[in-house]
Image 1 (tube, helix red, strand yellow):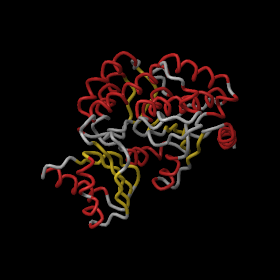
Image 2: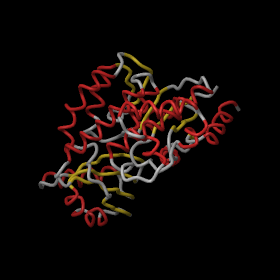
Image 3: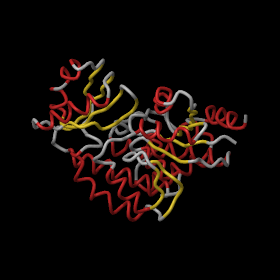
Image 4: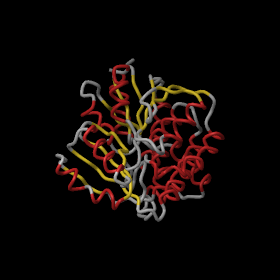
Length: 310
């Protein structure tokens, strides 16, 4: 059997109808969606499968993505007993990884990330927060520009290290907008301020750190299978580590690229669980020699099972 790692996407991977194939054809999916709806008093069938204005709101987006990823992973585990060398998630996806690793029950995780979204909104409310996607610049150039701009009073930070030449910034939207030309003059192919009102993984979320800590202390189990931290790109497997790292994750950048590079040699294959192929696309650029498969519906699940048995 191949050595595999399970990986889980974060916010931005959502789309209307995600998880519908599983829901319509599998009792595990039906039960998990029903239980999550009761836990949060949110109708996840409507949220996931019917036109609505909530799926793009972070307090709804986060539990929806986690739930669909957890369903995909649960159905896979029912059909295949492969044990991953480690699990890894991108931002929000680290909480899906916690579920997969046995660190937290999926219903506790659904509530946890719903509250995480609310706390993130509260931290950024009225502050003009935003994010920017940069393409075509080396990390060091971006880091140096951000550091210089912070010394001059602007609030901008690297937030997501996705792959070489693709970095997302967070901070005050007006400050980010004022730097579009600066980044383009430095060689950026694209510098796009995103349509977001939350600034993830930066110091603007400091107030959310202590708000989420009690829920981590209540819900995370003492020990679990290895998870790669977004903050350090290293393995952790205990409750104390999880609390420190998952609170730090709110205000520190996601080192997705670094995590894949540091750990790719441990496995033969990555398997992405959840909607779309965002991480599969990134991995093609980060580690071309290690394939990434994806499980987002029954067709892709059968394909993965076939690949693993070859």
